[in-house]
Image 1 (tube, rainbow, N blue to C red):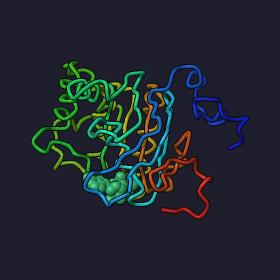
Image 2: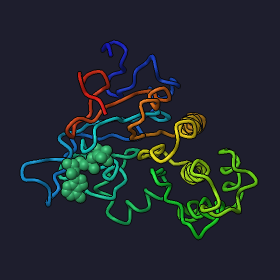
Image 3: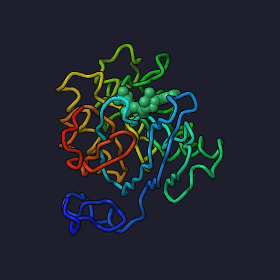
Image 4: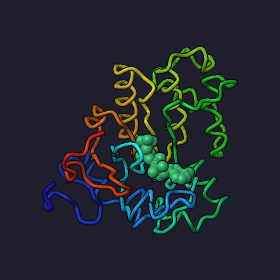
Amino acid sequence: MEKAKEVKGTGVDTETATDSRQLRSPPVIRVVDLWKIYENGAAGSAALRGTSLEIARGEVLVLLGKSGSGKTTLLNLLAGLDRPSRGTIEIEGKNLQALGDKGCTQLRRTRLGFIFQFFNLIPTLTAFENVYLALELAGKPSPGPAYEALERVGLQGKEQRYPGELSGGEQQRVAVARAIVKEPALILADEPTGNLDTATGLQILELLSSRCRESGMSLLMVTHTPMARRFADRVLRMVDGQIHPEGACEGEAD
Ligand SMILES: Nc1ncnc2c1ncn2[C@@H]1O[C@H](COP(=O)(O)OP(=O)(O)OP(=O)(O)O)[C@@H](O)[C@H]1O
């Protein structure tokens, strides 16, 4: 990327930003010099090695990288599920480390959405109840938005089905509805198409990226799926615990 095209301090490419408001508002997430050294890991090896990243409001970001490069470690730290060895994470200007466990849980329930490879729906709850639970945990218990979110992902008429009565693609649609219903600042998606066939995976990527853009939610999606690039504002690559713009890592492939 030519320097002139990048707005200083945002990491946002002016040619690909979907909305000029992205360039003015403060970043949804700011990560500075993040390190993670697992205590039980191999001596001298770090899973993250000085990673820095900013994500603008409404930006759709795809993070590619070989197995073991540190992608899941990064997502876990951003979600507040694990603590970095060094460095800072700010979500909407709030320093995650300063929040403590209770504060992190609250932030996770209200400002973050999650989508996983294996959907992670609660099997004993219906599609509606899975989505409603997210609202309840976010402190906004109201059935209307849960029904609306299911409709927006194309599941009207299937609200009372249990996950076991839905196809893989439909289960991932429920997971998308569950993530978007509380209108979080940021959705973290870990291999959201990893358990779906190509056509269904494409539909989910289209759905997820369009819902995020529509509602101004940011999306950080870790994937091995090259087709995810076409839905991204920015594509990054994790190499040995460091993030680089795609194209800066000659010879790297998944
Ligand atoms: N709990 C842990 N304890 C010790 N080492 C770990 C732990 N979790 C991950 N690692 C190590 O940290 C490095 C990064 O792992 P991570 O799971 O973040 O990679 P990844 O890019 O998400 O891989 P994949 O694409 O296979 O999921 C690897 O060397 C891994 O073995």
